[in-house]
Length: 67
Image (cartoon, rainbow, N blue to C red):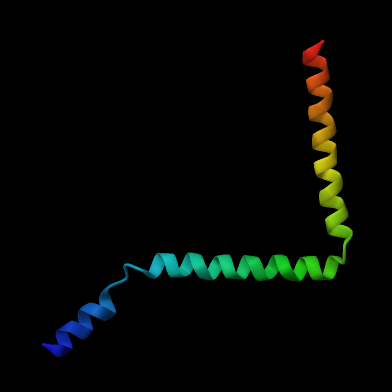
């Protein structure tokens, strides 16, 4: 009885997918942290500039549609 319960427990893979996604997410988060630490602010300014460009383009689009 005990050995069959252990076999069923070992063969059950119902939580394996979530565990794998969690491991991948942890790896990506670690990779992002490493990239940001090596970039030392240059990446932050590039992202800020990209968002500023998007905001400026949306403001221009808004001014075109309001006239």
